[in-house]
Amino acid sequence: MSNPPVISIIDDDGSVRAATHNLVRSLGYVVHTFASAEEFLRSSQLGDTSCVITDIRMPTMSGLELQAHLLARGHSLPFIFITAFAVESDRARALKAGAVCYLTKPFDGEVLIGCLDTALEGKGAATGK
Image (cartoon, rainbow, N blue to C red; front, side, top):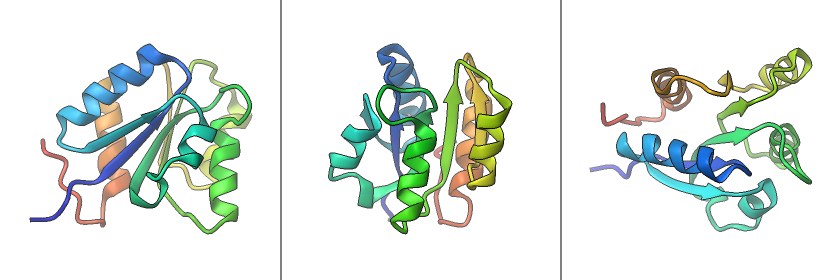
């Protein structure tokens, strides 16, 4: 039996973090949550992460800056971006850098599940659905 994928959720809003965690965990994934991009980068979870779900606008380091930072260091992880501020230039930048999805809060849980399925496709990941 293979290990379930590890999903890292990064959002400075605790309620969004908790709700997203509960949804993703209910699908059978291993879930780690972080209040900032810096907290994620300092964690031991980076090497185990199969997909990142992150807010775009956060203090200090944005989700877009996190994506660029990881790409520059050779970490090509699937990213799903969530934001309360739909800015076309952010969406374009995220997708150009390889983001799987760009969702505006509040988003439908089924849409996020579809994004996770797409992000983990080809990695032998079971969604638990």
